[in-house]
Image 1 (tube, rainbow over the protein chains, first blue to last red):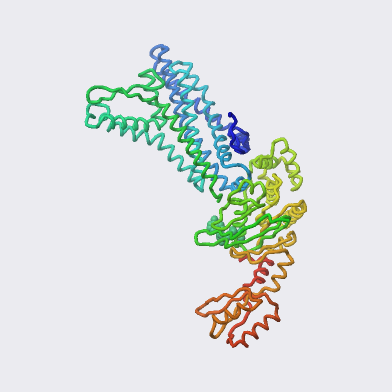
Image 2 (tube, rainbow over the protein chains, first blue to last red; image 1 turned 45 degrees about the vertical axis):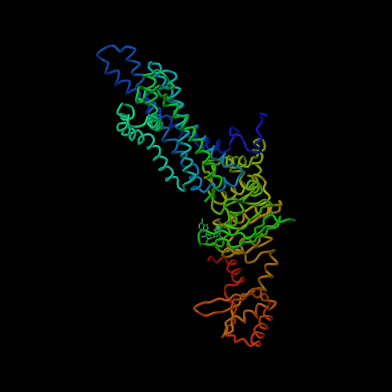
Length: 314
Length: 315
Ligand SMILES: Nc1ncnc2c1ncn2[C@@H]1O[C@H](COP(=O)(O)OP(=O)(O)O)[C@@H](O)[C@H]1O
Ligand SMILES: [Mg+2]
């Protein structure tokens, strides 16, 4: 039986009137394109600046292709980090008002008395915003492609960063909608989701820097002998997992594994087991990051739909 | 014809405040039912429960036989709801706005274009088809919101104070529209805090005060109930409990309550007889040996409520 028999439940893909309306609203008029143009112009200026600065530093000799690869990598990282922040902060800015905004503008009751289900309401709001975020991401790909042409960056790296960006947009978009559904005011929802975004992108790496400073040596070196081996492995895995919940952390571990082990997938960490070294496999940062954010995002999405379903509208 | 709305013991509490108190409302199919009561009486609360937007604290409600709490989609399919205060998506064009809601009501794209034009024709906004909704006047927004509520051809319209805040001309237009919709066979539940404002469109009236339905029925039967319904206040020197029992046994006495005010006890009486019967009651009461110190119709009877509503005095 290939046919699903879930009754009148509409598939996610079927044209969603809210998605159409939101997209139409977002793209209507000059605003969306003005924003996009300014964004690309700023990014372009920034890239030129990096290019000029680095090339300038080579001015005493003719840059080799290795130098150019260096420039390419610098541009790639810079653009990727900017995009990451843009996606992290623009996506929830739009979704945090998606439901509370309807309540504030007194349009929510009208919507809720139609046959539009909570599932389609939430998905319509989410995917309309994600489409815009995706547009911002894809619009900057040519700039990253410049780095690609200079060398030093592979196709896989480009694909990976796009995957990470898309997952970031998805996750923070969902968090924004969830707060928008729970909280009465858009301003509170926005403040909260920004708090979480800052925590994950900036706060977490700082905390972990401290953490690894204190415990890293204890865990990995011979000094950690007093901690039982199994406990140490568990600690290493949890710390590693938390590191990779931050996009910055994930980028760093992915890059490290790529450069040092030339692998996109995982590497073996040797841990002192009392008598000798045991190798434990650690997956590359992007794998943990995308999986964790995908699963967490889906769980929160489910939660949001529930919340909208059972909620009274006022 | 059946009852399209039925509520049983409907109660809604906001903390300690009882917004709806054991409301039993019945609206027949095909009626134009005026739901009248002063501000804060519980009209909006009732309508929002019927529109599946609010859950009652106790009691149940059915729309066209569907439970409002358990069969929300079926109820939503049956009703067109217009809230007292609402916003519009200002950045949409008039036709887009209606097209969007028609799509939300699962109307297939092939029939939507035609439907939108018909709706615009009905609410007399065809000439504003390509304008932005924001550019419409208050009365026009009210009409487009009504058109929106009609997109799925609902059996029942629930309209919360549709005429409030409109200028006289817009009121007349809305009233004409309501007549037309009723003539098309729609059942209409319409609320107002001014009876005279909706009296003319209504076949039935329900009067609500402080969350209780104090009278309901066809316009004629309401008039009858009003003329024969009095609230009396009776003060006695002593034997007040005995008097209450004696009064409760009288045929025209609907209800007796023992109340205390400023440490003085008195009886409050719901009485359904006319003036003559009232005089008779007092005579009988004295003859039975009760020492009556006070015997008066109170100012807060049904008739008084009715008067206040008729004149639109807001309490
Ligand atoms: N969300 C709410 N929270 C607290 N009290 C409310 C709320 N909504 C309505 N009420 C109260 O419930 C009562 C009934 O209100 P409502 O149904 O709006 O009356 P009406 O529509 O007849 O003017 C009022 O006393 C009002 O203050
Ligand atoms: Mg009201």
